[in-house]
Image 1 (tube, rainbow, N blue to C red):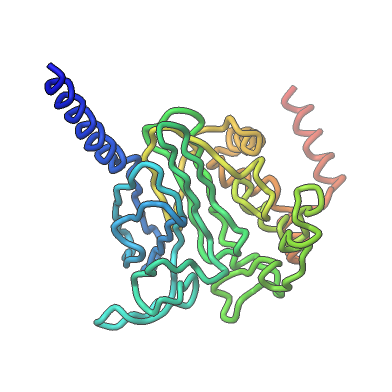
Image 2 (cartoon, helix red, strand yellow):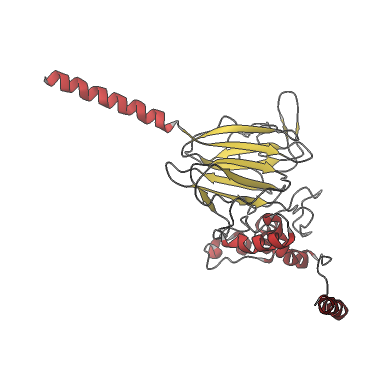
Length: 312
Protein backbone atom coordinates (compact mmCIF):
# COMPACT_ATOMS: atom_id res chain seq x y z
CA UNK A 1 0.00 0.00 0.00
CA UNK A 2 2.84 2.38 0.88
CA UNK A 3 4.43 1.67 -2.50
CA UNK A 4 1.11 2.51 -4.21
CA UNK A 5 0.80 5.87 -2.50
CA UNK A 6 4.46 6.60 -3.19
CA UNK A 7 3.94 5.87 -6.89
CA UNK A 8 0.71 7.84 -6.94
CA UNK A 9 2.46 10.84 -5.39
CA UNK A 10 5.23 10.66 -7.99
CA UNK A 11 2.64 10.56 -10.78
CA UNK A 12 0.90 13.68 -9.41
CA UNK A 13 4.24 15.50 -9.12
CA UNK A 14 5.20 14.69 -12.71
CA UNK A 15 1.73 15.58 -13.99
CA UNK A 16 1.81 18.90 -12.15
CA UNK A 17 5.20 19.72 -13.63
CA UNK A 18 4.00 18.93 -17.17
CA UNK A 19 0.85 21.01 -16.62
CA UNK A 20 2.93 23.94 -15.36
CA UNK A 21 5.22 23.82 -18.40
CA UNK A 22 2.19 23.65 -20.68
CA UNK A 23 0.45 26.58 -19.03
CA UNK A 24 3.57 28.71 -19.29
CA UNK A 25 3.38 28.31 -23.05
CA UNK A 26 -0.33 29.10 -23.36
CA UNK A 27 -1.06 31.86 -25.83
CA UNK A 28 -2.20 35.06 -24.13
CA UNK A 29 -2.95 37.17 -27.20
CA UNK A 30 -2.56 37.49 -30.94
CA UNK A 31 -0.80 40.61 -32.22
CA UNK A 32 -1.73 41.58 -35.78
CA UNK A 33 0.24 44.26 -37.61
CA UNK A 34 -1.43 46.18 -40.46
CA UNK A 35 0.38 48.55 -42.80
CA UNK A 36 -1.93 51.19 -44.28
CA UNK A 37 0.95 53.53 -45.16
CA UNK A 38 1.74 54.36 -48.77
CA UNK A 39 5.16 52.80 -48.24
CA UNK A 40 6.81 49.74 -46.70
CA UNK A 41 7.25 49.69 -42.92
CA UNK A 42 9.68 47.41 -41.07
CA UNK A 43 8.19 46.76 -37.58
CA UNK A 44 10.64 46.24 -34.75
CA UNK A 45 9.93 44.11 -31.68
CA UNK A 46 11.68 44.26 -28.31
CA UNK A 47 10.70 42.02 -25.38
CA UNK A 48 11.33 43.30 -21.86
CA UNK A 49 14.12 41.63 -19.84
CA UNK A 50 12.89 38.29 -18.51
CA UNK A 51 9.90 38.20 -20.86
CA UNK A 52 9.37 35.28 -23.24
CA UNK A 53 10.17 36.05 -26.89
CA UNK A 54 7.99 36.31 -29.99
CA UNK A 55 8.93 34.47 -33.17
CA UNK A 56 10.50 37.59 -34.71
CA UNK A 57 12.28 40.74 -33.58
CA UNK A 58 11.87 42.61 -36.87
CA UNK A 59 10.35 42.04 -40.30
CA UNK A 60 9.21 43.69 -43.53
CA UNK A 61 5.58 44.76 -43.90
CA UNK A 62 4.78 45.98 -47.39
CA UNK A 63 2.04 48.48 -48.20
CA UNK A 64 -1.43 47.01 -47.55
CA UNK A 65 -0.13 43.80 -45.93
CA UNK A 66 -0.52 42.30 -42.45
CA UNK A 67 1.17 39.74 -40.24
CA UNK A 68 0.17 38.10 -36.94
CA UNK A 69 2.11 36.69 -34.00
CA UNK A 70 1.02 34.54 -31.08
CA UNK A 71 2.19 35.98 -27.77
CA UNK A 72 2.71 33.76 -24.70
CA UNK A 73 1.06 34.65 -21.43
CA UNK A 74 2.99 37.23 -19.47
CA UNK A 75 4.66 38.73 -22.53
CA UNK A 76 5.81 42.34 -22.14
CA UNK A 77 7.58 44.58 -24.60
CA UNK A 78 7.23 47.18 -27.33
CA UNK A 79 6.61 47.53 -31.06
CA UNK A 80 7.48 50.32 -33.45
CA UNK A 81 7.70 50.99 -37.17
CA UNK A 82 10.97 51.59 -39.01
CA UNK A 83 10.83 53.69 -42.18
CA UNK A 84 13.16 54.47 -45.07
CA UNK A 85 14.95 51.15 -44.71
CA UNK A 86 17.44 49.72 -47.18
CA UNK A 87 18.30 46.03 -46.75
CA UNK A 88 20.33 43.92 -49.18
CA UNK A 89 19.73 40.30 -50.23
CA UNK A 90 21.37 39.06 -47.04
CA UNK A 91 18.91 41.15 -44.95
CA UNK A 92 21.63 43.55 -43.83
CA UNK A 93 21.13 47.31 -43.85
CA UNK A 94 19.66 50.19 -41.87
CA UNK A 95 16.64 52.49 -41.61
CA UNK A 96 16.18 56.26 -41.75
CA UNK A 97 13.85 56.32 -38.70
CA UNK A 98 13.28 53.87 -35.84
CA UNK A 99 16.45 51.95 -36.68
CA UNK A 100 17.49 49.49 -33.97
CA UNK A 101 21.21 49.50 -34.81
CA UNK A 102 21.44 45.74 -35.39
CA UNK A 103 22.41 46.18 -39.03
CA UNK A 104 19.77 43.57 -39.93
CA UNK A 105 16.02 43.27 -40.49
CA UNK A 106 15.86 41.40 -37.17
CA UNK A 107 16.55 43.74 -34.24
CA UNK A 108 17.93 40.86 -32.12
CA UNK A 109 17.22 42.38 -28.72
CA UNK A 110 17.95 46.01 -29.63
CA UNK A 111 15.40 48.80 -29.21
CA UNK A 112 14.43 51.72 -31.41
CA UNK A 113 16.84 54.62 -31.76
CA UNK A 114 14.74 57.75 -31.03
CA UNK A 115 12.69 59.35 -32.36
CA UNK A 116 10.09 56.60 -32.81
CA UNK A 117 6.40 56.08 -32.06
CA UNK A 118 6.13 53.14 -29.63
CA UNK A 119 3.34 50.70 -28.73
CA UNK A 120 3.97 49.19 -25.27
CA UNK A 121 2.32 46.09 -23.80
CA UNK A 122 2.28 44.09 -20.59
CA UNK A 123 0.06 41.03 -20.96
CA UNK A 124 -1.47 39.78 -17.73
CA UNK A 125 -1.25 36.20 -16.51
CA UNK A 126 -4.93 35.66 -15.83
CA UNK A 127 -5.38 39.37 -15.18
CA UNK A 128 -5.63 42.63 -17.08
CA UNK A 129 -3.37 43.59 -19.96
CA UNK A 130 -1.84 47.08 -19.91
CA UNK A 131 -1.01 48.92 -23.12
CA UNK A 132 -0.23 52.39 -24.45
CA UNK A 133 1.15 54.31 -27.41
CA UNK A 134 4.07 56.50 -26.37
CA UNK A 135 5.62 59.63 -27.88
CA UNK A 136 8.06 59.97 -24.98
CA UNK A 137 10.87 58.88 -27.35
CA UNK A 138 9.55 61.13 -30.12
CA UNK A 139 7.48 60.34 -33.20
CA UNK A 140 8.11 58.96 -36.66
CA UNK A 141 4.76 57.72 -38.03
CA UNK A 142 1.04 57.48 -37.10
CA UNK A 143 0.07 54.32 -35.23
CA UNK A 144 -2.93 53.02 -33.27
CA UNK A 145 -3.63 49.99 -31.07
CA UNK A 146 -7.06 48.32 -31.00
CA UNK A 147 -8.25 45.59 -28.64
CA UNK A 148 -10.42 42.86 -30.17
CA UNK A 149 -12.72 40.43 -28.36
CA UNK A 150 -11.66 41.32 -24.84
CA UNK A 151 -13.56 42.45 -21.77
CA UNK A 152 -13.21 45.69 -19.88
CA UNK A 153 -12.51 49.15 -21.24
CA UNK A 154 -10.41 47.95 -24.21
CA UNK A 155 -10.18 51.46 -25.69
CA UNK A 156 -8.44 52.23 -28.94
CA UNK A 157 -5.39 54.40 -28.42
CA UNK A 158 -2.65 55.92 -30.52
CA UNK A 159 -1.81 58.84 -32.74
CA UNK A 160 -3.60 59.60 -36.01
CA UNK A 161 -2.00 62.98 -36.62
CA UNK A 162 1.05 63.37 -38.85
CA UNK A 163 3.24 65.12 -36.29
CA UNK A 164 6.07 65.41 -38.78
CA UNK A 165 4.07 68.18 -40.46
CA UNK A 166 3.47 69.97 -37.14
CA UNK A 167 6.86 69.38 -35.55
CA UNK A 168 8.53 72.50 -34.09
CA UNK A 169 11.64 73.29 -36.13
CA UNK A 170 13.97 72.71 -33.17
CA UNK A 171 12.66 69.15 -32.80
CA UNK A 172 12.60 68.22 -36.47
CA UNK A 173 15.15 65.69 -37.70
CA UNK A 174 17.18 66.26 -40.84
CA UNK A 175 14.91 65.56 -43.77
CA UNK A 176 11.79 65.95 -41.63
CA UNK A 177 11.14 62.20 -41.38
CA UNK A 178 10.66 62.24 -37.60
CA UNK A 179 10.04 64.57 -34.66
CA UNK A 180 12.31 64.41 -31.61
CA UNK A 181 11.17 64.63 -28.01
CA UNK A 182 12.37 67.70 -26.10
CA UNK A 183 14.44 65.36 -23.91
CA UNK A 184 16.24 63.95 -26.95
CA UNK A 185 16.69 67.39 -28.52
CA UNK A 186 17.91 69.33 -25.48
CA UNK A 187 18.86 66.72 -22.85
CA UNK A 188 17.68 68.90 -19.95
CA UNK A 189 16.40 67.21 -16.75
CA UNK A 190 13.14 69.18 -16.79
CA UNK A 191 12.35 67.72 -20.23
CA UNK A 192 13.64 64.22 -19.41
CA UNK A 193 12.00 63.98 -15.94
CA UNK A 194 15.39 63.03 -14.52
CA UNK A 195 17.52 64.13 -11.58
CA UNK A 196 15.65 66.62 -9.42
CA UNK A 197 12.68 66.33 -11.80
CA UNK A 198 12.24 62.57 -11.38
CA UNK A 199 8.74 62.68 -9.87
CA UNK A 200 5.21 63.57 -11.02
CA UNK A 201 5.20 66.56 -8.65
CA UNK A 202 8.43 67.99 -10.05
CA UNK A 203 8.16 67.11 -13.75
CA UNK A 204 5.31 68.90 -15.48
CA UNK A 205 4.27 68.90 -19.15
CA UNK A 206 6.48 71.20 -21.21
CA UNK A 207 5.34 73.32 -24.12
CA UNK A 208 6.73 70.63 -26.41
CA UNK A 209 5.00 67.70 -24.71
CA UNK A 210 1.75 69.68 -24.87
CA UNK A 211 2.18 69.98 -28.64
CA UNK A 212 2.31 66.18 -28.77
CA UNK A 213 -0.59 65.79 -26.34
CA UNK A 214 -2.84 68.24 -28.14
CA UNK A 215 -2.31 66.43 -31.45
CA UNK A 216 -2.54 62.92 -29.96
CA UNK A 217 -4.58 63.18 -26.71
CA UNK A 218 -4.57 59.44 -25.91
CA UNK A 219 -0.81 58.94 -26.29
CA UNK A 220 1.95 59.34 -23.71
CA UNK A 221 3.49 62.79 -24.17
CA UNK A 222 6.00 62.74 -21.30
CA UNK A 223 7.20 60.33 -18.61
CA UNK A 224 4.41 60.92 -16.04
CA UNK A 225 1.48 61.13 -18.44
CA UNK A 226 -0.13 57.94 -17.05
CA UNK A 227 -3.64 59.17 -16.20
CA UNK A 228 -4.88 59.65 -19.77
CA UNK A 229 -2.49 57.37 -21.63
CA UNK A 230 -2.50 53.86 -20.10
CA UNK A 231 -5.32 51.47 -21.01
CA UNK A 232 -6.44 48.04 -19.84
CA UNK A 233 -8.23 45.05 -21.32
CA UNK A 234 -8.64 41.35 -20.44
CA UNK A 235 -8.53 38.37 -22.79
CA UNK A 236 -8.08 40.48 -25.92
CA UNK A 237 -6.22 40.18 -29.19
CA UNK A 238 -4.57 43.37 -30.44
CA UNK A 239 -4.20 45.06 -33.81
CA UNK A 240 -1.36 47.51 -34.37
CA UNK A 241 -1.98 49.66 -37.44
CA UNK A 242 0.55 51.95 -39.06
CA UNK A 243 -0.89 55.02 -40.84
CA UNK A 244 -4.52 54.19 -39.92
CA UNK A 245 -7.23 55.69 -42.08
CA UNK A 246 -10.33 56.17 -39.91
CA UNK A 247 -10.40 53.65 -37.02
CA UNK A 248 -13.42 53.41 -34.75
CA UNK A 249 -12.96 54.16 -31.07
CA UNK A 250 -14.16 51.06 -29.21
CA UNK A 251 -14.67 52.82 -25.89
CA UNK A 252 -15.15 56.39 -24.73
CA UNK A 253 -15.23 55.60 -21.00
CA UNK A 254 -11.90 57.31 -20.35
CA UNK A 255 -12.07 61.05 -19.54
CA UNK A 256 -9.72 62.00 -22.37
CA UNK A 257 -12.19 60.84 -25.01
CA UNK A 258 -15.37 62.35 -23.56
CA UNK A 259 -14.97 65.71 -25.29
CA UNK A 260 -13.85 64.01 -28.47
CA UNK A 261 -16.97 61.84 -28.57
CA UNK A 262 -19.21 64.89 -28.22
CA UNK A 263 -17.33 66.68 -30.99
CA UNK A 264 -17.50 63.59 -33.17
CA UNK A 265 -21.27 63.40 -32.79
CA UNK A 266 -21.60 67.03 -33.77
CA UNK A 267 -19.28 66.84 -36.77
CA UNK A 268 -19.80 63.23 -37.84
CA UNK A 269 -16.06 62.61 -37.68
CA UNK A 270 -14.02 59.88 -36.00
CA UNK A 271 -13.72 60.37 -32.20
CA UNK A 272 -9.92 60.12 -32.16
CA UNK A 273 -9.63 62.67 -34.95
CA UNK A 274 -12.18 64.89 -33.22
CA UNK A 275 -10.18 64.69 -30.01
CA UNK A 276 -7.15 65.95 -31.86
CA UNK A 277 -9.12 68.72 -33.55
CA UNK A 278 -10.70 70.01 -30.33
CA UNK A 279 -7.28 70.82 -28.89
CA UNK A 280 -5.51 71.62 -32.16
CA UNK A 281 -5.26 75.31 -31.30
CA UNK A 282 -2.45 74.56 -28.83
CA UNK A 283 -0.33 72.87 -31.46
CA UNK A 284 -1.08 75.70 -33.87
CA UNK A 285 0.08 78.22 -31.29
CA UNK A 286 3.31 76.38 -30.46
CA UNK A 287 4.24 75.74 -34.09
CA UNK A 288 3.23 79.15 -35.36
CA UNK A 289 0.42 77.82 -37.53
CA UNK A 290 -2.70 79.85 -36.83
CA UNK A 291 -4.51 79.23 -40.08
CA UNK A 292 -7.09 77.05 -38.32
CA UNK A 293 -8.17 79.80 -35.89
CA UNK A 294 -10.89 82.07 -37.25
CA UNK A 295 -11.29 85.50 -35.63
CA UNK A 296 -14.53 86.62 -34.06
CA UNK A 297 -16.67 88.59 -36.52
CA UNK A 298 -19.59 90.87 -35.59
CA UNK A 299 -20.79 90.73 -39.18
CA UNK A 300 -20.88 86.92 -39.08
CA UNK A 301 -22.71 87.00 -35.73
CA UNK A 302 -25.27 89.51 -37.02
CA UNK A 303 -25.88 87.43 -40.11
CA UNK A 304 -26.45 84.32 -37.97
CA UNK A 305 -28.96 86.17 -35.75
CA UNK A 306 -30.83 87.50 -38.79
CA UNK A 307 -31.15 84.00 -40.25
CA UNK A 308 -32.38 82.67 -36.88
CA UNK A 309 -35.07 85.37 -36.61
CA UNK A 310 -36.18 84.71 -40.17
CA UNK A 311 -36.57 81.00 -39.48
CA UNK A 312 -38.71 81.75 -36.41
